[in-house]
Amino acid sequence: MSAQKHEKYQHLIGRARALSPTPCAVAHPCDESSLRGAVEAAQTGLIRPILVGPTARIEALAAQFELDLSMCERVDAPHSVGSAEAAVKLAREGKAEMLMKGSLHTDELMAAVVKRDTGLRTARRISHCFIMDVPAIDRVVVITDAAVNIFPTLEDKMHIVQNAIDLARALGVERPRVAILSAMETVNPKVPSTIEAAALCKMAERGQITGGLLDGPLALDNAIDLGAAQIKKITSPVAGLADILVVPDLEAGNMLAKSLSFMAEADAAGIVLGARVPIILTSRADSVETRLASCAVAALVAQARREDLKKAVA
Image (cartoon, rainbow, N blue to C red):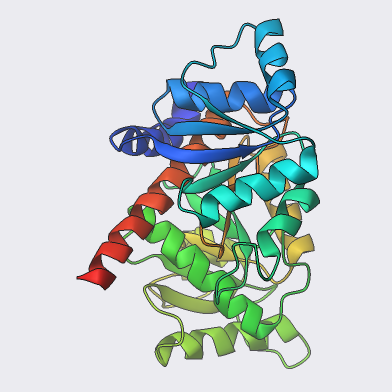
C-alpha cells in the first residue's frame, strides 16, 4: 500500500532530481524537523540549501542530531524575523530560487514576503496549493486555496485559478482540467459560489484565465468521479477528470484536504504561489515523502519560471 500510495510523489521527485539542485533559502531552520527536512532534500538532489538563521544554533542542532551540513551554505541572522527578511532578500537578489519555511511562524515569513518595497510581491494574488497524492485517484490532484485566502473575491479567485494552472503545467499536465467547486452543478442565485464559478468559466472563455480547461459550478463527486457525472448527465471535458479543485473559501478547502488526508490516507504536499519564487510551507507532521514532494514541486515550478524567462528574453 505504501509504495502505491507514494507512487505519484515518486514520479515528481524523479523529475525534479533530473534537474540541477535548486538554490533554496531556508528561513530559520532551528528545530530538528525543519533542519532535517532541508538536509534530506539536499541529499536527495532536489535543493541546494542556504540555511538562514543563527548559525551557531543551527550548527549545534546539526551536531546534536548528527546531521551533515556539508551541502548547506549558511547565512547568519539573529532571530526569526531577521531570518525571514534575509531569506526574502536572497530571493530578491536572485541568489535563491525558492523559499522554505523553517521553525518560525508562517505569519513571520509571509510578512516579509508581502512587504511592498522589500518583499516578493508580483501582480498576482498570493495563494496556496495542496498537491494531493490520493491512493484512490490515478493522478495528482491540486486543491486551492485551503491555507492563505480566507474569503477570496472573484478577482482573487481569478489569480488563484491561474496560479494553480501554472503549477499543474509545471508538473507536466499539458492542459489542466479545473473544476470550480460548489454544493451543486447548476447556477443558483442564492448560492454565491455557483455564480462566481460561472463567471470564472466565462473569464477563461474570454482569455482572462489561460492554459486550462474550466468548468463549474461542479459538486465534488461530479468533479472527480466519471460515474457520478454520467448519472447527472453532465457533459464536460472536466467533469470526473479534474486535475485542480478550486474551493469556494479557505474553510471548505481546509476541510476537503484534511478529510482526504485523514479518511482517505492521502498525502498533502504544499506550496505558495504568486510571489517571485515558490514558497514551501512544511508542517512538523509531514512525512519525509511529503517534504521531499513539496521540494520537488517547488523545484519544477522554479524550472518552469526559468524557461518562461528565457522565452521572454528571446
